[in-house]
Structures are given as structure tokens and as C-alpha cells.
Amino acid sequence: MPINLSGFHGSKLAAPWIIVFGFTLLPGFVAAGEWSVGLNLGGGRNPIIGEDNYLAAMPVIAYRGERFHANLGNPGLSFFNGTTNFGGLGYSLVKQDNFKLDLVGRIRAMGIDPDDNDELEGLDERKPGFDVGIDLLWGSDLGELNGQLLTDVSNRSKGQELIVSYAYPLKQGDWSFRPEFGVSWQSSKLSDYYFGVDDDETGGGLESYEAKSTMTPFLGIQAEYAWSKRIRLIGGAGIGRLGDGISDSPIVDGRNLAGAFIGAVYGF
Image (cartoon, rainbow, N blue to C red; front, side):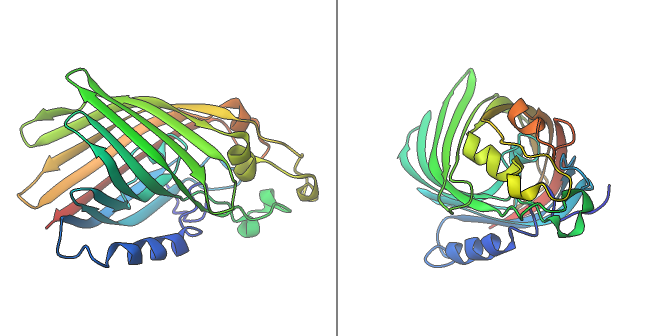
């Protein structure tokens, strides 16, 4: 699988957001809560025309306190549900045994850099952004229901996304598993910013296209193994299927998504 850090998930384009994110974690939290650091290796299919499939190594930095939590580098389901929100901040407004309501901020690591892709000639650069919103989690013996409502505040797409999923966490000895399925809805503004083609971008032979709101179903599983008291091995894999509003775009080659990641983290 060729290495590509500037394709569908915009890893190279997201570098400034990663730097800003990292500096927001340090003040005031070093001595409190639980920290984890590590490394993930993830890859998958890139549906953008002319782009190689991607493989990227990502540092993992995570913090969890009584109310505040932050994560960078653990892609979770983002490799195969089209959301690409692989890092963010959160604060629990309501925290109960079976219910949680968080205010969240998410890095949207999507982006397209057409400079090195002849098939995208004439297309403007698509840049990563930052979303804010709410994250709801309700759990019982029957599993967990999760809902996220996000809106772009970085003046990129100015769009929204709603993600609803169901998971059934399992634990067997030192192993933990989280199978999950759900659907992601992206607004027309969000879809059009990243996958639309404006009239003034057609000079290289691309047809103009106005992307519509769309739904992407996904299915995946995450796993964790407690190797020692402080070291955990993590991984995940899954598939997704882009909705018509995105897959019909002339810059998209097919609608199927697939990805996986594996890594290790050290907790302290």
C-alpha cells in the first residue's frame, strides 16, 4: 500500500491543526488526570481519483480527567465512516453511570492538495477544518447508543454532520472489543466543499458538480489488549459506503471505504 499523507484524510494538510491541538493540552493538566502516549499505524482506501491508497503513522496523545478529555491520533471509526475526525477535545456537561453529554471540538482532517495530481488539475485546494458540537452517549446492558452533532467553525465548509451509532462493548480477560455500526449524515455545504466542483474549476477537464447532503453507513470493530499494567495494544478495522451525494462527484472513484489501524499506547 503506497504511503500518501495528503489524500482523502488530509494528514499533511492537518499539520497546523495538530500543532495547535497539542499546545492546548499542556497548560494546567500535566499533573492531573490520566495521560496516554503512543503510536498508531493506519491505512485504507482513498476514493479520490488519481490518489494512492494511504498509509500513515500517527502519534497518539490522550488525556482523561474528571470532566475534561482530549485525544489526538486514535482514528477510531474515522478511517471507514467518512468523518475523518481523528482528534478533539471534550468537556462533560452531564456525566452519569449510563448517560453522558459532552461539549466537543473535533479536528476534521479532510483535505485535497491537487498540486501533485494531474487528474485534479484546476481544482482548488480543500483544507482541513475544526468542528464543535455535542456528543451524547447512553448505555445499558443492551449496549451503547451514541450521537454526535457537529458544525464547522473554521470557515471552511460551514456545514454540519450528524453521526448516530450503536455499539456492544465486550470484555474477555485482558481483551476488550467494541463492535459498532451506524450512519453519518453530511450536510450539502459540507459535502460540496470537499467533493463539489465549481464552474471555475472545470478548466482541467473536470465536470462541474454540486454535492448534495448524503448518508454514509459504516460497520467496524475496535479491539484493545492489556499487555501490562501500563501498556495497551489497540487496533480496529471496518468498512463504509459513501452516499450518492458524494460518490457521484467526478473527483470520487467509487463509493466503498475500508480501513484499519494498529498501535500501542503507554498510560501514566
